[in-house]
Length: 511
Image 1 (spheres, helix red, strand yellow):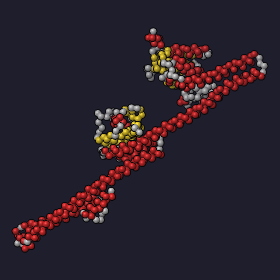
Image 2 (tube, helix red, strand yellow):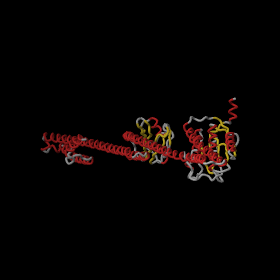
Image 3 (cartoon, helix red, strand yellow):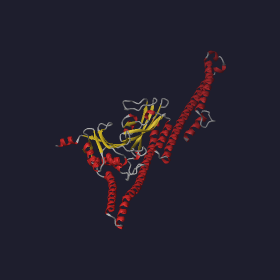
């Protein structure tokens, strides 16, 4: 730049612009106009003199009759023409230097804008770790850097799918998903190479193009790569008043390198934050577990110890002794049930995979009904035709027992088991346990299946593990469970499991 400045000053002095160390193009053009105006006047006068000198009337004049005068006029004309040509050459050289300087200045300005945008991204990396804020800063900086009308950032959501997570200037692209190899972003993600598009995009080359709110005449799309790993794609587009160049593509590619780092850092921060939240939740659950188990185990133990101490200190008659023994037996069974419930939950989450076979729904529900009848509970079973599910027989029986016991304890009779094809999915079977109790408050439903969750109005003893165990066993068998309010009062728990051919058909094929 220093050499260019010296050349400009030197050329300016040669052409007579001594008052300008760095003249403008306008001053050069004015100097050229002055030069050629003077040249026209002088050349016109010299030409007129030469014409007079060549005429017969001029020869009679003594001045033009001398040969040296004639030669002098010709030489003067040639010298002035050479002078004008020399000044024109220097003026052209000065114009070229000024144009080069303007190009360098524009390039430097663009470079400064690029560095400013990169600095903004760097600040986002160091000061902002929320992913949505980082993406918004990146896209805003990219649009400002290139003077684009709109754009989007699409992140790799699945191994073969991109999802638009930040969009500007195109409503149709919000939340859009494209497969790798489809559309412009999918094409760039698959080839991992930046792409410049001039004019409308080819629908033959780019399948399933995302619609645009306004016509796009120029677009850029670059991959977001961090240490060789594809994070997503950065897209920008403009209308007819802006045509991107290869320089813009290089600038956006460099910008994308820094943007990918900030996205990777934000994702790492979110993963670490989720891990910390999980650890905090686990610690809280551990504390709740200890407190709940301590409270629930203390109650039956206190009753047992109280009965034993009373029997040791006093001579009691047979009836009182029988009452105390009955209390000890009931509290002992209660203590055993609590311990078994904890062990069941532990086994449900850490045991090997459950078996999967065709289980007759009517038979499984009948076994549960007979077990409840032995406890003096009346359970109605209604199964719509022969139905079979793919499940583990023992796990399914445990699920139904827990739901029925929950219906009798927390709900109210009559309790029924209903089964039939799932209307939402013809390939599944729905088994429902319904009761006529007071129902479940809406505030309790979101945490109903959580571990150690107990409703605000629940007074019956327990640790809040029954429904959590049910949900775990159902999901491990490939199904899901929901709860709804029953028409006329009460609750309905719906277990949906994959349908299977009846056990009779399966056994017939095996034989």
